[in-house]
Length: 246
Ligand code: ZN
Image (cartoon, rainbow, N blue to C red; front, side, top):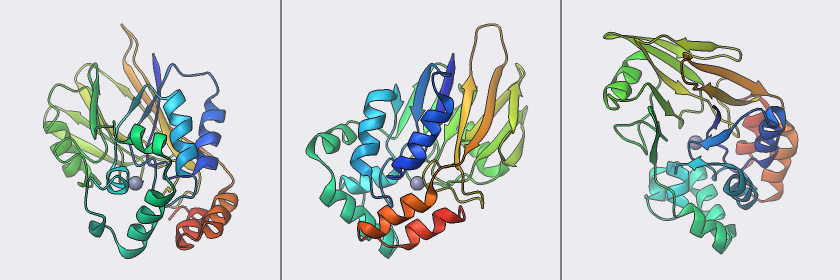
């Protein structure tokens, strides 16, 4: 079974479509780790695309802020503006669907959380020590999947040693029986590791085979997304930064 794992789409339909097109029909399930909306100009279209295609979707802090379930004041000024804009344009059907999402999920021995198992909405897992805490809070999981930081990451746990960090395109993790993994696919729609390409991972889980994770990137038309953001009257820096992946 291959899961295509994405996160932090943030209303960037061009990036989402580029990822789905790049993978074609070479996956069995699509899983999304939240922050479908916020920053970008196409929230309804991104929701519609995921509603039809994804088998597991969890909510992120931006999704919950747009719904009024967490305080928008916790965002910086412009992120708050984008959240309020999104709230205005969100269609009733799309809002109702977003409202059904929870910030965590489990599929077999895989735990999914937008931010972390300990704090699914706000915590940033950015390094080995953070990954150790995340794995300790999901003791049954072989793989813990998180998003939220917009930086692709993998961290392996063997015994009580956890090592890892930024996962560039092409990084592959093959998990022996005694290895557990924390993995962050990075962001489809607002990558922030200096690589402007949309970021995601594929996860292979097959009976009798070691679990395998591979990090991938795909080029999309970031300039077109930046123009949509300006045209919508959203803060232009949410588009500008897409050109640099920062
Ligand atoms: Zn995000």
